[in-house]
Image (cartoon, rainbow, N blue to C red; front, side, top):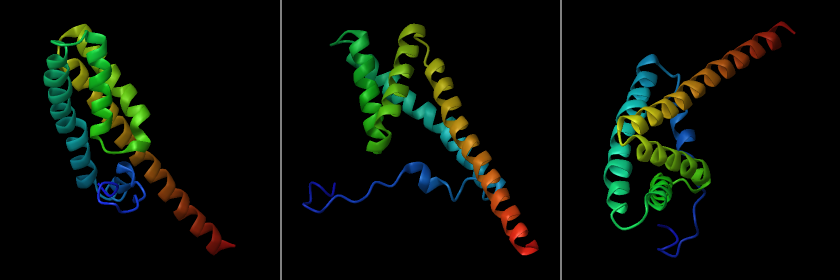
Length: 143
């Protein structure tokens, strides 16, 4: 939006970087984050991007092209240009999984596992990093 207003573009803030303070801060915040990103987001996004948008596109273009277009729109909708390549690949894989099975539960499950895996990995890394910092501070006090 800043480019349209004539303002210099602001530095992109990664969505995951904005979530890091919530990850591992408490079991409630981590569980809430997992529920939103691992359950609600996949259901909503797959219903919109595969169940509605991609299916609508197949009325005008061949299915493989509809998959690629819906994958690109999926990646663009996340508003993180730095993550476009991996989101495009994920969106395309989700599209092909739906095209093969014609069952929306397939891409919802894959999407849920992907998002949950990212949150769980970040939680694990946060715990490891916090433990490292704590142990480092203890070591510095001893020395």
